Length: 221
Image (cartoon, rainbow, N blue to C red):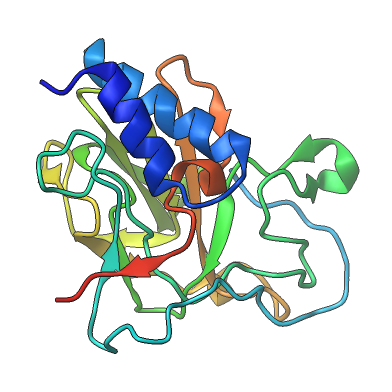
């Protein structure tokens, strides 16, 4: 198995950004290999989604590429989709840490623009550990949770109609379902999206932008 030091150096190389938080989180995942929500309501102006940079040379049919932490030739992390981050709308911002419930709590994930029916990909390789209701008592809106057996990190994607059942092995970038229509629960002014969140082995919530690749990249095939 690749040593922790090698994984940390590789993670730092992959995180092509001066952000220390991203390097620290990816390095922590590498060390783990060696050892082993609802939305609130806040009124605001409706604005366009925040754009996530895309490489201009990428082929149109390409799928999001991830990060290979253990050098086994397979992606361990990937973007569920790359249509942009949900910006400020009538219900608030889709950014991690954004205010919810009038400031009484913070948004514990990242919202990514996703038209109803859009294919959603696994943000992390691992095992589907849970499929359930995004909101208690509402069987229509669902989530998929994936846990890595090596790092014990978990990723959860809300508002996705699942195509994989608990116990299924998935690879980062593999389709796990399709985006659901939030219009059935929220009035106009909500940007349709999926909510992505990560937690470490202790259950601490992580900023998805510090975990996922620095910029959504696309593979050559």
